[in-house]
Length: 136
Image (cartoon, rainbow, N blue to C red; front, side, top):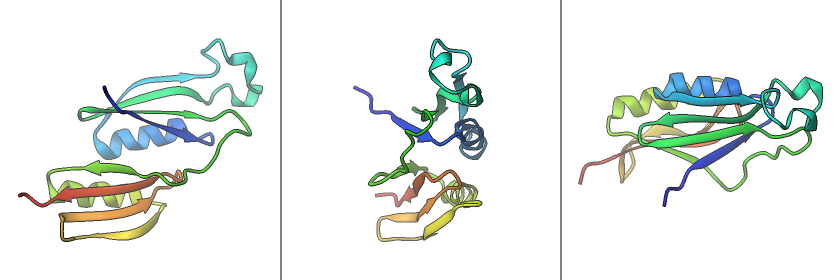
């Protein structure tokens, strides 16, 4: 079994995934628009350039996402994306990049379990935790 995350956006999926690719060193594997799918006629013409399905490889994980059809987007509630890295420098860099034009909810700092840990909501409204655990 594999558990994968899928993020919904309100029209910014392409921009978000390009940002995540750059910020976290990922690789976009797929980015399909509504225009390029059989669902073309089910969305308004101005929405056809939006993303129906995107995937990005981040280390051993795959993150998926899409632009929710018009009127169906809901802001994330009760969830957070978590990025774990081994290098505290990577944790600081990723945290700062994700926080750009977003909102920091817990500044990155040392905790009792981590060399670096912080929480934020990025510019796309996605809540994140960045974690670099202490070695046992």
